[in-house]
Amino acid sequence: MAWGREVRARDLLEVLHSQQPRLAPIQLPGFEHSPQTWDRAKLGLDCDEVYPDIFIGDAATVRDKQYLKEIRITHVVNCAEGRRGGQLNVNAWYYQDADIKYLGLPVEDLPSSNIEDYFHCAAQFIDCALYNGGRVFVNCMMGVSRSATIVMAFLMLRRGMSAEEAVRAVRRRRGVWPNAGFLHKLANLHNYMRRQRCPQGSHFFVPLPYASIGAPMAQP
Image (cartoon, one colour):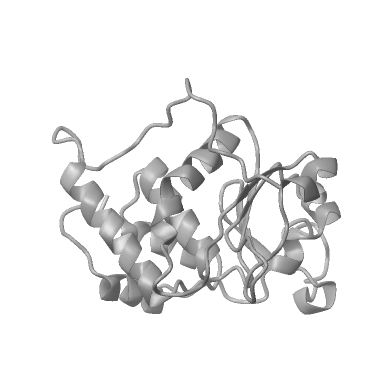
């Protein structure tokens, strides 16, 4: 684990530049056994499995409940909840008939957005889902900035990755690009975790308090 030094946003930007996503064409989840590579634009679907049982995708895909059921999604984290431009107006009621649990984060894709306010509740929600055998779809509008930042924070908080490792892990599976402000928030999280990590270990790891019930659910 690369916890030997503090990092800055520009260090994470360098990781984004150096770690290129997998070469196209990339098969869409759910079509792995198809003899052809389906055109995502024609299907109106766009997502990738960036970590075992964690998918990042766009707004159109997360609204397609039939497709979510086909790839066995049990939980959705909407990182763009809201009614403004650049936000997606869905809620827990929308997914009720699909038996999908929902967490909504009202984050705008702006460098000044306080996305860090949701790092811990989102990480707990995702970890609870995975612990119980679920599969999580994390979305924003394009599946590039807000959703990627939340998944990277999860990998840091719950899987012990440094910021650089988390950025690299997600970037190699999808062409993500968190905005400059979000990279700064991830760097701050890394530096805080580095200072607080247990002195006996080589990295900081926050185990999920399974005795407590999961993250607060977004209200319809």
